[in-house]
Amino acid sequence: MRINKFLGTALAIAVASAVALTGCGGESKQTVRVSHTQIETHPDHVGLVAFEKYVEGKLGDKYDVQIFPNGTLGANEKVLELIKQGSVQFLVVSTANIESFDKLYSLFSIPYLFTSESAFEKFISDPKIMDDLGVNSKTNGFAPLAAFTAGTRNFYAKSPIRSVADLEGKKFRVQAGPTNVAMMTAFGAAATPMSFGEVYSALQQSVIDGAENNELALTDQKHGEVTKFYTYDMHQMCPDLLVGSEKFLEGIPEEDRKVFEEAAQEAQKVEFDAWHKRIEEAKKQAADMGVEFINVDVEEFRNKVLPLHEQLLNETPELKPLYDAANKANQGA
Ligand code: GCU
Image (cartoon, rainbow, N blue to C red):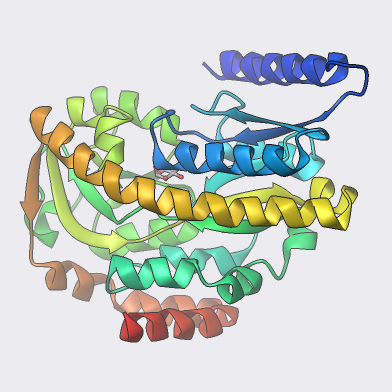
């Protein structure tokens, strides 16, 4: 499995490079590779198509933007290395996957940080917030250009979760990142971090009892085939960030960088719209797959992990200004 993925990556990059070199009409264009792990109907992909159109509409003579969906360039953890080297130029990645590089991104893993999706969307579309999150970009080797919504993350499992007690002692897949492990421990459950692409077979083979994600994991990743109970406990809202390789962005003319940044803003708008439509369809699709949606006493879940806020802020005091800004967005929403 790993070897195949590696060969797939090498092959995809070799093919893409060959295209860039041969080009057409003499002058070769620079290939701009954009990687993500979702399927082509996913809002992230729809947003990226708008990104490609915007860039090529303005600078199509210089850049050939190519989108690689379905993790064909590799799992996010691996593609991040390629981003740093500059051989892949853009990546859509959940903030949870990059908190080990930069603790500021762990902000979004704080459970129950936002009180509504509208507060969350307002917060992540504020350019000042993006600037604050990206303050260490030069050292990190990647910069956040725009945030896509990924809705609310909830638990889903092979047996129904109707209260916190139902989580106890169960194994849940979480995204890589220490905050998720702390959250699951606080819930009294066990965290099993693994890549997104590995979750279906882990559920099927009962290596884990459940996972946590938005509703699109049930349909797009087919987790609803092997997990029939989805519980609205609403524990996290983590955006998917469109990050650019610093090596690439620093190496192109300033006016070109501006076009890529504008394209990212356009992609965000398109992604938000696509999300709101797609999520409603996905809920119906999942119900048709036989998934039962369960409403619970959200306060019970929230109270269980609320002490984590203080603990996480004490461990990472540099989160405080962003944490306060999130609370302000909650009040204004
Ligand atoms: C969501 C999110 C992805 C993330 C995935 C996961 O699908 O949009 O960016 O990788 O969850 O749980 O790994």
